[in-house]
Amino acid sequence: MPLRLDVDILQLRTRHPFIIARGGQSDYRTVRVRLTDADGFEGWGEAAPTKFYGETTETVLAALEHYRTALPADPFDLEGAERQWATMLRHNPSARAALSSALHDLVGKRLGVPLYRLWGLDPARAPRSTFTIGIDTPERMRAKIAEADEYPILKIKLGTDHDEELLRTVRDATDREIRVDANAGWSVKQAIRMLPVLEEFGVTVLEQPLVPEDLAGLARVTRHATIPVIADESCRTAADIPPLVGTVDGINIKLAKCGGLREALRMIAVARAHGLMVMVGCMIESSIGITAAAHFAPLVDLVDLDGAALLASDPFVGASISGGQVTLPDAAGLGVRPR
Ligand code: MG
View 1 (cartoon, rainbow, N blue to C red):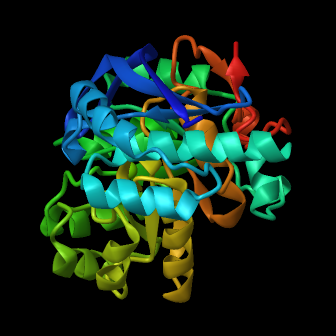
View 2 (view 1 turned 180 degrees about the vertical axis):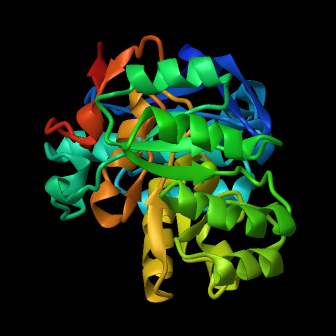
């Protein structure tokens, strides 16, 4: 019997409106996929589409209808399945990532081992995760920082016309480690002007200062910077990495950009071969999507897996970032269950 694919929409709401340089909202619709085999084993995955990468909930649902016709006869054919999906309908990375995750979950469950064990990884090696404070009024940012007091590393969204004020608000409110993400919101001039400000406030990492395609600009910013510069929007898949060598210090991997867990592992290998730092990030998504990414967190340097922790309520239980510590479930496959 071939695999059965079931699809449903998850309505998610963040505790606070989640605002970044491109705007933001409180309500998100992700798509859960379930792959069931003849023996009743069921694998789960989640697609967290973003317009910036060309996807919506509707495009994911439509893409999944295409991919439905190309489910592997053998669920262990992970490599073949990812390659086939990428070839038959390009782009749609979050839809493909959901299927990839579901297939990995199913294989782990069939073998009775957690995914990290299947990959030979030590979950204790996962670095601590940041927790993101979105752009807001000084008063509300102070309240959010106080509310997030269990998290030792904060990630601050910048890319506004009052970034210095935002940083000052955060630094006055806490002495915790701060990393910043400009989400492509700066010009080269602005970025170079901000570097000493970041230094003054003790910021330790700068993510995506410029528009994705300005690699020459990124190289200039990185040359001036005293902290690591990480490419996020500039780096979707492994093929984006070689051109980034010499322009940034590291790359940020997200399943919703790269399209699958095997591609994520490939990105790590390619980045390491080029001496780059590796970060894992996420979208606003439930613990299904977060847990899939958390399983390869032992292989990276920087972790930003707060997508489910930012939710008012998460329908699932899986990997946790309580206290900033990435804790992986020890059940088979992804190890995610309903709350
Ligand atoms: Mg980012």
